[in-house]
Length: 380
Image 1 (cartoon, one colour):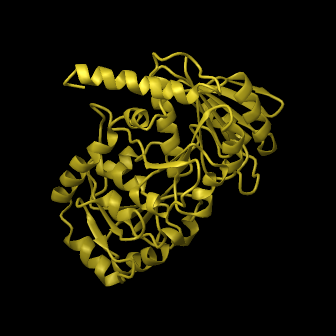
Image 2 (cartoon, one colour):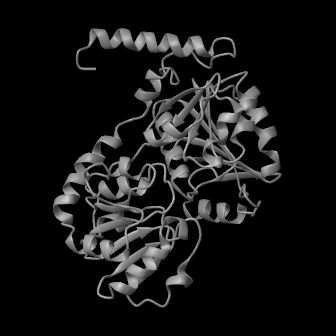
Image 3 (cartoon, helix red, strand yellow):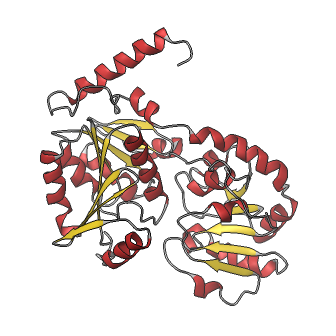
């Protein structure tokens, strides 16, 4: 059985903080669903300050009736077909080494904090793909470890990624899950939604909008940290905690606003909301226009509050929502065929775990087999 290892210093699934966590979880789940053994290594301590999170991890697993084993500060459990492991930060490197020798993965995916070190350790024995989630030092840092592939989540990120000897750079748009068939959606209201209301995402403009439009209801969703106290004094604001399932929020609001002041790579929220027929009004920073396409409203990052008020009042969410939904549907297609074309994903029926001498040959051989199959089947 071929094996994929996802290894990084953030929490393993299903503990989601932002877009990077969601993107990697969905990609890992796709490998598991395709018949791969999928191992996901992370930490139950935050990589930026070692804040302990093990109690929250235990509590979530208990709440969802998910069995786990705990030994010497290591948690092991299964989630959506993935073998998940959470260890302290100081044990990530040793855990990676152990998995490389015992699990012998065909491919290793890594990203974000400390990913360069993980990539450098894995490169001699496995095919390594670094996911470039942003253009920040953290997002692009994995390239220092010279992974075989650097997977940019947008054309914008690809343009900003430094060229590195031995690393092939490509775009792999993030995976998205389509709405579940027959899923009940609440009645859509006139409220406007914003996710992650912090300064970098446009909180200053948001405050001005909330004050300027007292008749407009705003729903704010906790993101990287809780900013509820900053908006507690507004009668037209509802602040909700971070949600694992965002579908009720996306489907019940007429618009999503993304007033980011930073160069976002490819905001997941734009596509996620669009899948539920909710269009976005967003700034033109970074990869935001790439995610928005022509199915939304783009405003200059320098646009003032009056321009935002005008856009909010004039937006026809019925027409824009249907356009956004149609465009977003294309992003729900599987990502494994794209990885196959890049030589990263050997087909599941290829020989089992590739050795350090044959991993590239295994990928190439499986790609050749699939090219041959496509030539025989005009519908492939």
